[in-house]
Length: 463
Image (cartoon, rainbow, N blue to C red; front, side, top):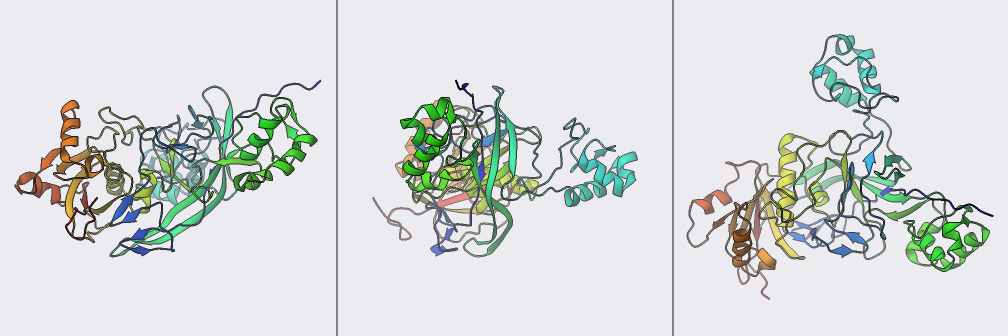
């Protein structure tokens, strides 16, 4: 008699080569990213509350410690995942072990090692490394030189095959396995090149106990692996008792679909970010901090101001605004200025006018974005749409893309029902102070200006 085995869920993260971004009609690396155009950003696949795309629930799921930018995989809801032993330096998981603490007592330093503060006496592997090189950091004060040593020296090796262990709030364990990593390099923004060589895309999959073509423990129907699900659907024994030789033979015989074939011989499952129309796994980037994934509530949809060290978001490429804005050049790990512009960009791409997590745009709407730093220069002479800060829109113009470009009345009705919405209307016919402030970037360096093509003007298409 074989005992029933309860399996823990495992999470893995994948990455692949740069797909490229179409910029004002110019394609970088020859691939248009899900309709995303920079300086003419076509927001096809902007996060829409509750919409599921290829099994990926966009703007839907957040986890405690690991926030997947809108992912729900085959009924496996990733609620309550907390990183155990892996921290984030800046925005990306670049192999830093800043914040790890000691092996026995994680996070026991009085402050994180990439910030100035009290001396750190061997409270973490990073503190020990820096203290060995400069005893002042260990005995007197953790000054800017100590911070510099930490950020340059405290790095682990994160490569393909790295597994990030996590804990579920229900006591189960999980893991993120990185199956591929690729560096983006330079990106054309329309009028200049942005150095995105510090942007790493990852292929991330759910980890499973063993490959379907290898005998081992039973794998239940909820296992996030297409081949496993194929077998268990027809042979429940493989899901509740044991994955024996018969299950192996069934996997070899029955798993013939594109994704099933890929997953038949590997010990990982579905892509965390789902798949594109060609069944290629979507890439993800590790972004420090968590976003409030609610909608229709004041302040929702923004980046949380206080996030414990080590909690991060897996931002899905092509289907999530968080990842899109990184690709546009707004890399929040570079500076506090870019961190704020990245948040403004997320609001702008989603057309989150009231700063409450509610999108007012439609898939396929083409926009042109411009910022104070010129990372996205104004490469198109289009009409003003709206101006955004990390808290939502400051100004909205008549004829904006509200409700898919139907009318500004839609926005005004929404605003009236949500008194916390402070976005002002900038009337192009009046050209008043609101209009001037909406265009002006220097007075608010955190502002992202959004322009759009008006029907019948500047060559704009009409319905």
